[in-house]
Image 1 (cartoon, rainbow, N blue to C red):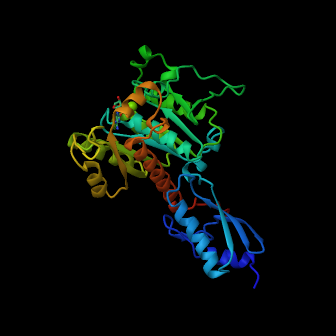
Image 2 (spheres, protein in one colour):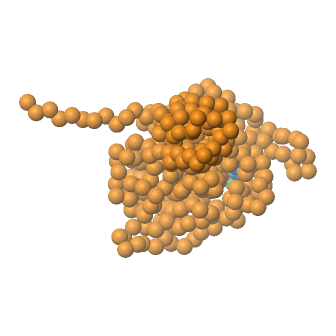
Image 3 (tube, protein in one colour):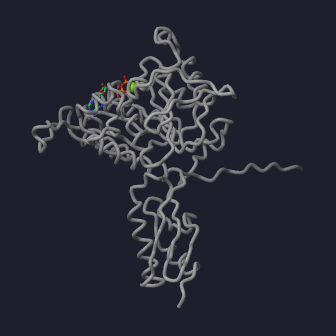
Length: 365
Ligand SMILES: Nc1ncnc2c1ncn2[C@@H]1O[C@H](COP(=O)(O)OP(=O)(O)OP(=O)(O)O)[C@@H](O)[C@H]1O
Ligand SMILES: [Mg+2]
């Protein structure tokens, strides 16, 4: 019996995307089926290039065709990706945001827990998977991104009078720190900050982006609340350290996003433990153990992972080379990469679960 595209498609209808809980054919992920004798090739478009299930789905495709169509088939799935656009952005499309598929806020209740470090490493890690990534530093009082990426130049303006983001490690960057004189910034009030953030997003030429990460200033005050309400966010990631004072603030962060109906994509535990380089088997839980993991469970939001306290992370931040972009990857860098994949996975799940946009019907009497 010869192999046909119909049979292949029917077989692939048995491959389930474990995150979205639906088969890859119904999800319109399969295209371009080619058959030459026993050779079967096709493209599977996952919802993110950072999909942690990529290999599992690929194996399932090969097995499905071999078991259900032809045991001697040579199956070559081409694993590709098309990141889904978040509906909130689709609805509020402005000229410049039209190419941006997802906007993610990185927040914390407490200051100094590593929000900027996490934002920077997640952005670079996502870009390393092949995703198109942008990063905005909205912290006008204490911008970190110029230092963490070692970029100082003022962004240029293009012929359409839009700001051109800088680019480093494959990430498009804009920071308040590149535009506002630090001595002036201290007198800025909340409304000025949020309108500047809005301008940042709408008056910059971001082009096509799968993920635009926003590093928020610490806290859950007016400024954060206004930013969160003015931007069509896909979701928020909360960073916390394990000790109680940080966790109390992280809980407030989760509550703030839930109040304004922004999904919390998950909590990250930073500075989770310390392993002395000369004692690689030891883990010292300096700030306590599993605090953020337990909080995530209690609040019923995903736990995205833990990042150890590591000297190279701090040095990388000060020298402008994020841990995930360094030659030798330590435990922290490996965690950042895993957390980036899990975050992308949560974004895909959220986008797939969204209600379809309701059509408004106008009736004439
Ligand atoms: N996992 C880590 N290991 C080592 N150092 C870290 C780690 N995470 C963050 N740091 C260091 O801790 C300091 C604070 O981190 P960072 O600036 O990212 O925090 P933040 O939450 O953005 O602070 P702010 O509230 O001021 O915006 C920095 O010096 C950073 O390099
Ligand atoms: Mg910061």
